[in-house]
Amino acid sequence: RILKPKEPAHIIVYRELERIKNEKLWQKNMVKDYHTQLTEAIRVYIENRFEISAMEQTSDEIIKSFSVTDFLNEKNFEILRQMLTLADFVKFAKAEPLPDENDLSLKNAYNFVDNTLMKITKEEDLKLDSENKKI
Image 1 (cartoon, one colour):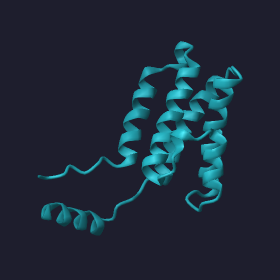
Image 2 (cartoon, rainbow, N blue to C red; image 1 turned 90 degrees about the vertical axis):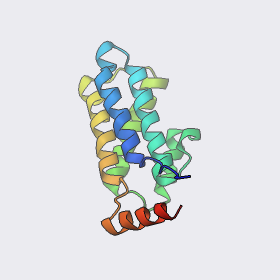
Image 3 (spheres, one colour; image 1 turned 90 degrees about the horizontal axis):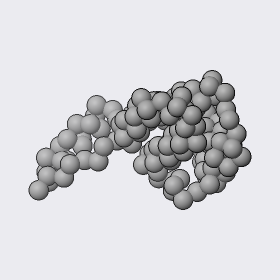
Image 4 (cartoon, rainbow, N blue to C red; image 1 turned 120 degrees about the horizontal axis):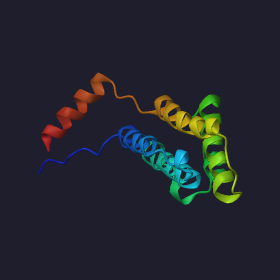
């Protein structure tokens, strides 16, 4: 039986981010849903990519988890902090972000993934290929 490899974390999250972008939730005054879905997509990505249990953690706990690792450089850390903090303000303090801020969160979600996706080299790809053929 051939095991189909799990899709890479960045492929899964890119598909979800495209869906969110195309739904235009914040433009339809569904700002809370927009930020909830956006941060949920990023949390799933963090779990799949970094093996940090982001779905069970608060935003502060996620930020703390990353602050004790060397997974993120300062820029990516700040991108993540912006998305999570704004989403928390929207969800819990009923904040109403400006359109630019909503847009920035989506751009930052893409930037975060672009900057942190696991790059597989051609050699690793070939190695995986030959290992899958042994199954």
